[in-house]
Image (cartoon, rainbow, N blue to C red; front, side, top):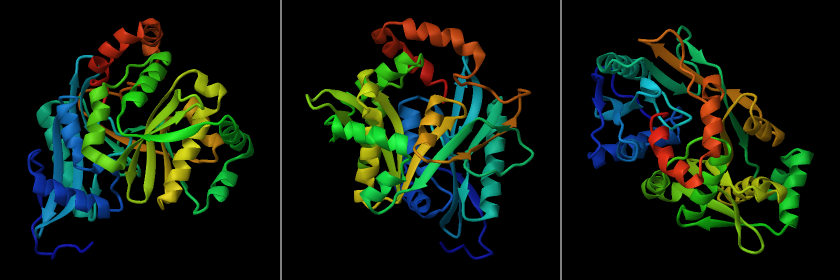
Length: 353
């Protein structure tokens, strides 16, 4: 991507949610910028604003009439979990994506000015790579990424033996996968799953908005039993040559039938057929079941560098299920009737970000 002439002045602008033309230029930049991720796409602004009703500050650096960097921000002001400015709420990756140090520095400086003006307790960048060695860093999350080989058999053999046996078990059990045009089956499986774990569920309208906004780049894959029962489902994002399974859910019988292992194998197999080259297993917390599950697939963890600029607090917030102060809440949520949990969940989860 060419750089602007040296004499071109760099300016920082805020993307108007109604400016379709500039949003298209934003996405063109994101698709070409090596530092950008699916969560840098302009469509997230509409979702954060309309589904979760949070203010957004989608900043871009422009010089010579061309975008040189982007920084999507969401402002979450919650009496439950505090007042923060984050790039990006509800995303595992974020922070600045730029093609020059000047653009990146200018975008981050503007973000800090906005954070101070809003009076937030902290500013958070969910970086894949570190940028600020002097900022406090959340050393909790890792990501798992691995190359998809061009041949199904090679991909299957690349899975460690015990996990590969689970995939074969799912195949032997007659499981099949289907691509859904709606989120209906996924949502039933997702809400049942998170309820068992004692955490609030996203609203159904959020998943519907993802499908509407990102189209074919947001895919729902559901695993069904031979009798047609849906067992396990996953919503995945496609970005450039990568596939990212992002939200998943299942019914309890899925484990005995190896439906979850089969689900991710089917996603990998289908992605391979589409010419996708990278399987991004996404974020997990160290020492958790999902962390161990992904390791068992032969993926190696890579630390994520969530960096914080603290304004009105002395330490990084710990708004995650590992925090001991939430154990009572998690226990109570598990005992709550599913219908009530699904009604109440969106009011809670919108404040988490």
